[in-house]
Structure formats: structure tokens, C-alpha cells
Image (cartoon, rainbow, N blue to C red; front, side):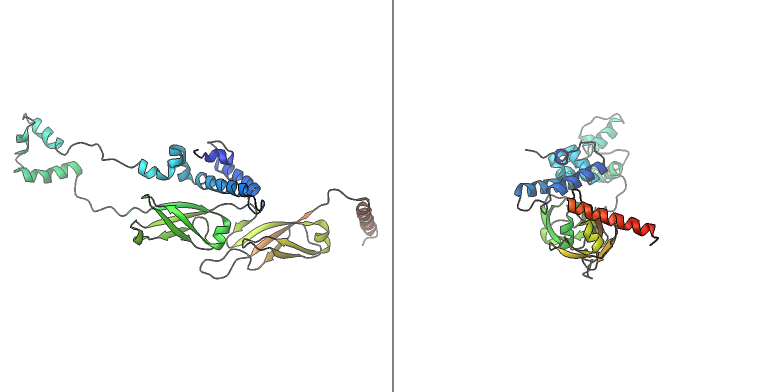
Length: 308
């Protein structure tokens, strides 16, 4: 069954870019493997969502998909130019002879406007048909778009992509790559022209990238924010990291974890992880907890009255 990327993301065909991005983030958050450990159906759904977003988030690939459907990757070949008007090279000579009252027979090639013998006529025809001889056109730069996850950008990855000429090639994507990066590929050994891989890093369900840094929000219990403590945070490398919460941490405070961000291009270390603390208020209190909060309220009120 043919895939419908719009249905996969749950949007209409005329959905705006912002709507597509919002739908992707919502679905990616719901079906992310980290949220559904061991669920193969969620993992398969996550891959479908990423594939759909890869196509619809890029204006050029979306335009081709809207026109050619599941064959959009072959759009350049399907829409390739033909041979122009298809007129025969001999039309020029025949018409030239007929305008002078002659017959359209072979004798039309013997002498037109005194140009001489038959072999010289082809030089004249070439000039009239195509104009002055031109220098060969410069090679056309080929771009191949690819969308990767933030985890792939963190660790580096290998992707099999389809060259505009139709051949499938395996390409290495370096760690630390950012959206908009152009990776030069010169596959001489594969017998195809060089091209550029244009990278888009898809939005992540948990992390937000800021250059070489990554941001995420840590939800901590109110008492941890007030009294201090420790919480565990995820990393793009897969292992959790301890985040120390100082006593009296205000809602929205940012804690910087050095070297826990994206790898820097060229292997020069890593960026940082920026953890935004969000205190979570208790929803249902026991009688004992309510009494404690009431005593705290009364103490603060008495302190205010005393001018402390």
C-alpha cells in the first residue's frame, strides 16, 4: 500500500510548515522509543513519522511528493527534458529551397543562396539552427536532501541515499553536524558524479539544540527545589546524568552541565547541557502534608508581621 505522508502526520495536504512541525513533535514525543521501551510497533511508527517529516519539511521534496506521490524521488528523471521541438535538421534546408520556388527534393541541397556544395551547408545550418558555438556548460551541482535524528547528529551515522542519477550510495554523516550543513561526496569509485548531502536535523521530543549546546527541562518535586537534592536527566549518549539541584532553586533556573552537549565539529570537545528546572507542585495532599504546609504558611505570615 502506498504511503500517505500527510495521513501519517495527521495533517491536511495544504497544512502550513508550522502545523507539520507541530504534528511531528507531538507524534514523535508519543511514539519515541525512549518513551515506549521494547515496543516494536511504537518504534516502527516512530520511523514512519520521521520518514514523513523528512519529506514534508523540505519545500522541494514536498513539492515533488505532491506531484509524483511515492515516486517523488525519481521526479527529476520523470520530468527530464526531451529533445526540444523534435524538428528534423533537414527542415531548414527544405523550407529555404521552397521559399525560392524550388521543389522539396534532394536538389534543394545543392545550392542555397550560393553557399556552395552540400558539405558546406551543414556549417551554415548549424549556425542558423543553434546559433554560435557555445562553451560546454559548467557541471550542475547536485544536492541530495536527508533528514536525521538528533541522536544521529550526536553520534554520527551512515545513510544510504539515492543519487540523482538513480544509484544508491552509502554516505557517512559526521558527528556534530547541524541543519543546513552541506557534506561533499565525491564517489568516483562508484562511477557517478559528485554531489552534496544537505542535512536537516529533525526536532527532538525531549531536547532542543542551541548550536553545540542542548537544552531540556527537568521536572523536580517542590521539596527538592526548596531543600535541594538531586535528579536524573537523560543524555543523547543514552546514559542518564545526575543533576544537582541547589537549595532554594527558583522555577526556571538554568543549570549548566559542562561537556554534556553536542560534539563539536573537528573533534574539539563537546558543548554543554542546559537544564531548566521546573518545580512540580503536589496535586493531592495527605492530612499530614496539608498541616505541614499550613504551619509553614503561618510561620511565614508571622515573620512578615514581625518584619523579619
